[in-house]
Image 1 (cartoon, rainbow over the protein chains, first blue to last red):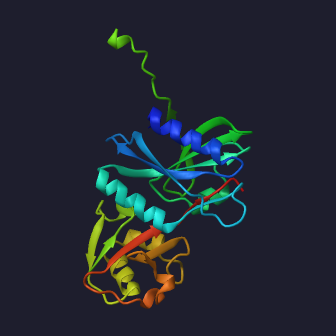
Image 2 (cartoon, chains in turn brown, blue; image 1 turned 45 degrees about the vertical axis):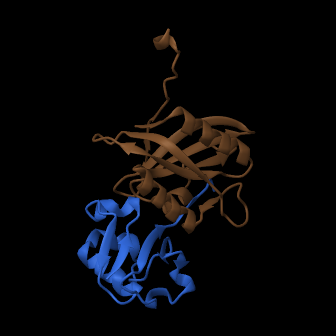
Amino acid sequence: MILIQSTARELMLADAVQAFPDECCGFLFGQEDGEGHRTITTIRVVNNAKEGDKRRRFVIAPLDYIQAEQFAEESGLTLLGVYHSHPNHPAIPSEHDRIAAQPFFSYVIVSVLERKVGPVRSWRLNDEAQFEEESVAVPVLSTGAENA
Amino acid sequence: MATVIIPTPLRKFTNNTARLDIKADTIENTVHELTLNFPDLKKHLLDDKGQIRSFVNIFVGNDDIRDLQQGKTPVQTDTVISIVPAIAGGFA
């Protein structure tokens, strides 16, 4: 299970809409508990460095990756994965996604349909290098009632 | 002796160690030593021919070894080597 906290989620979704019709991409930082449940507290938006058609591919530049590892180390967070968008396509990883995927990382995919956010799903490689879906928990919004 | 920074996705193969000190004189010998000490890293770093995989970038400081002397790039005692997995994908 992966929970993306509200502020991080809003930033990620805004990036996906703003980048449309291109794919967006960025890093996910947070903590993992002893049962493997992940909480994303921070995201970092990065440039889609793909040369050519960014509407169907994304690439993160190596120096952006190095900086993401440095950020995680300095902030005491864990680099838990990557998000990207699928413009006008479902939030299901492609074979290209799978071949390039790393172990351990969560791959969050945001489907964007004509500038509107669609399903958000997350995937992780299993030991056979195949994607398995992990459930995405929706953050509970505060009603303010506890302060009343 | 150089310091090698292991990327987060591969730390489960290095006993969750992020930085390793490796004694070697070139990048390729550093990688060789790494895979000797941590055999599970091998399939993630090297292809069937023993060459560094195309999905793996190796940086010395901020320089890609492809822009230096590739695997023959010399390593000094204060060299910081980053293993950088290629992060890419897309719907098609």
